[in-house]
Length: 125
Image (cartoon, rainbow, N blue to C red; front, side, top):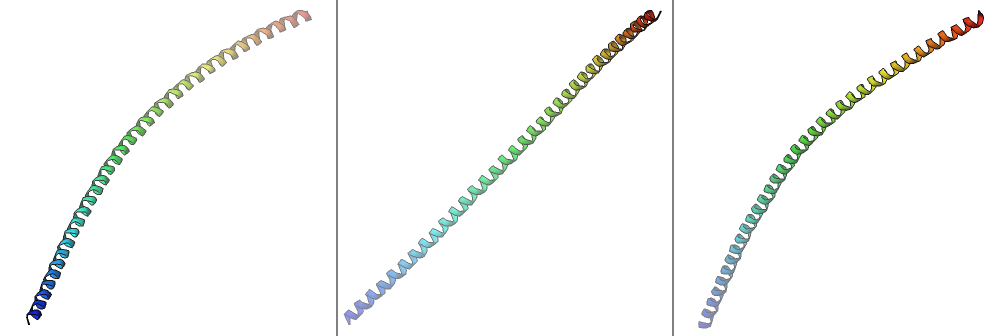
């Protein structure tokens, strides 16, 4: 009977150890799940912070680009206005030169016609 009793005690000890091992496994699983949750929260937080920072950088860059585009447009408008003014001045100068040339040619032609008329008159008389 003592051997049976020892067998029962050993069986109870085995069951006790199995329960302790199962409890330890459950405790470890809970700790792993808690660690996974903290890791997921940390990674999610890091990703969220990176996205927010990236969005801020993109918005800053967008503002800079808009300012640069506005500055270039302003410069181009000023350059176009300057070229337009220069062209108008150049056109005016060319017109003035052409009018002077035309006037000079007309004067020369009139003088030549008068000279030829005198020559014809002299020749006929």
